Image 1 (spheres, rainbow, N blue to C red):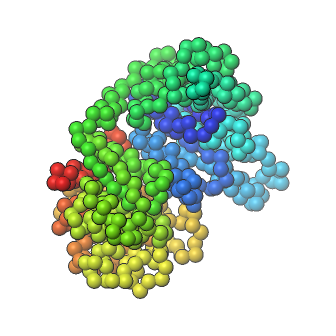
Image 2 (cartoon, rainbow, N blue to C red):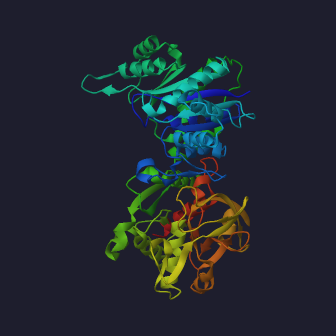
Image 3 (cartoon, rainbow, N blue to C red):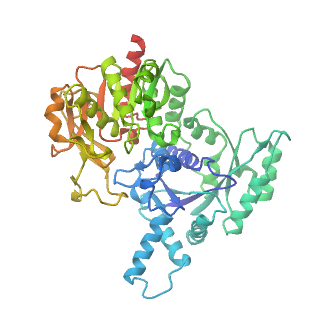
Length: 543
């Protein structure tokens, strides 16, 4: 039977609940337990799919086509457990389901209320698909005291009672701020936060205290006394030099031992942390470094490219090199004079995904630079489309090549996909369809040309990767583009949709329609990122 661990946050947001959940799951996994992590988001959007990257960071896509919170990326990277649609729910989705039932008359005329109807829906979500698990970690988004998170707190209060003390515990992540003028850490915000949570009927079993200075024993005892927990259950969490050091750090502070003790488990095997020590060693002791220029649209907010950032780090770990990432605003490159000065120092150029016309000409210019100067190039989603438009304009003689995403064009080298094949059958879509959930989403298979560069990178001819896009490279232009040196080395199994392009006459030039960064893990770097960083290492030796 699965046991529940509920994770809440207090005092301020951005304390790292997601990272804590991922680290705790990794530690339990290292002891041989089967784990899964879920995220409850209190906002009213049905999913993050239509939210601005500036507000919410990247949208993480699962194999089964859910657009989810970026924390699910942490969960996958730390545990290797593939996230599912059922691992992320928002208030919006819960209310949408309840209102649809009410309109159908499923409630038989009863008054529909937050308690029991909303809380029951949250509990049902928490209990879905858990038969094969030992622990389910449920992270509640937001901060205790937020109005919108109240139904979730009430649901976990009920769940704790229903499951019983031995099957459900609560971990509260809080801040112990350092007041420089006083020269001391202050415990009062934590006390207030725990009091707020307890007033809602949830008494935390363990407190994870984020602090920038070591937590003295006196303060630890004080928190334990006033928050009604054991002193050993007050776990200090200082900033780590890397997110990949966090599991080992939390183990050293006794987090996983306290969690197991709270469940009454005293005979758990010791954790095998060799994987994490290896990752830390690769991260902390590189044998060289490379600089990668990422030419994107949302570079002012690194969270918009969270998985991409981590996948590049993983590629560096595969070769024991430090990856310095330069975030370059594509709009800067609308003028050619800025281009060479910014891109010449780079050992590799990556053009990531994005939506809309802004910055597209800058991305096209950076593709041209990489092609002409033989700098390793990696294009992802929109990046691949820009590589095809650049090739069409400059090597295939189609001067007006463009994308229908940017407005009407006589040469739609990139256009909207109107139909594609999925597991459910033929999917169709028009230009006026709702934005939410209407893209080609989730894992799709692709076939690679046997003798292609990309097949040698993967070491396979059949792959499955995750997609999130509305537009595709137009297959009607394939012949023209191939005459200009681009090779379509990966296609959908039906041969209709281009998935990968490459230039055989270039040291490393690959564009992919999917998002390989979503599948990269520190202990299993994605082959495309490992290959790209390897090419960048070679480039660094040439420069």
